[in-house]
Length: 452
Image 1 (cartoon, one colour):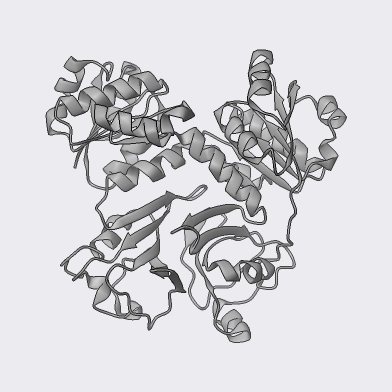
Image 2: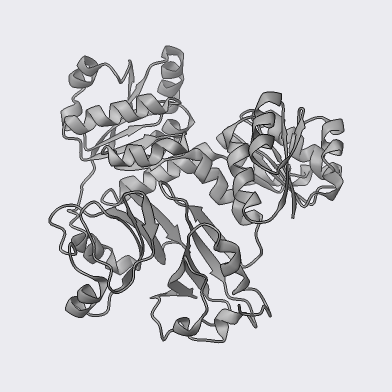
């Protein structure tokens, strides 16, 4: 595909790198000349200095030959205008990043579609809902639901005392019998790998597991996780992510929202009915003690400062808070943050990439999730008529090295993948894929494609 990415910072460059790895022709449009020189020095990407909402700049980027135009600047008005102009100038599809949640209502989406914008994305909105999902399953580090929860991907950290520690997968299967979940990847130290029957689980392993809904309790028990009840939360940051979380959860949980900006606090008071708004600096230990941080079940830091989010979460851990969640924008900080004790990391770049990469792929891809902390994807693919995956048992498929089938969704039923399972046409198949394997896996699901 010919893809134009309009950006003004790291989100655009991260997307560009991910898409280049998928063998697309990428052009980046950005107003910052120095940044583009740096990109050109390290990649083969084509770059154009300029404003993406300029007709002349878009024509220079050959927008009339573009299969997809993605505008992910911080300014939503520029993104909207860029997408509208791109479609009018001949682009086949357009995606615009927006910040205002009202833009995502069904009625407004239709208006934007009529103007030429095919898809709207709000990373802040999605980030807020990821926080909510974690609060509903706080024992997990990361959660990704597939097909309305028929299967889920859980990331759990193995603590001391977990029943699976120092045992192989084969031994666990022999002890328990058939399991309604499957470990598809382990992140240990700096390495991520797909486990085999002889793999031994070790303390502090981060394990990605695909599970059926009815098996979640057993999965958490084997991982050494105790059921965690969340009633009282402290939410730091009243920006877009914080507002989504507070508005959605304030009728179910006791929420204290700490915001340093006084004017924003006044606006939050008008928006939120049941949340307690506190004007103050969450880095102030005395303030946190006065507000009863020792009685908090979950501490969520979603300010625009990753350093503030990380620091305040670590403070919360020292006071015995059971669950900490931090918004961390710098991808290089994610693994460090996990290693020093923060339970869950939310990253808007990965959120945006998960959504947008799906639209750069074929119709076989039903959903895609870029995982936090490791360079890997969870992909949900649809088996097309005549595709290689429908012609052999799973054990006989020539899966690319670094990819593994974890589960299958067939209508209202879900299955955990085993070797003698036969995938059928229109099945949705969940695959864990390490870098460089997603496109190869996709070919196995294409109509009339050849196996390799």
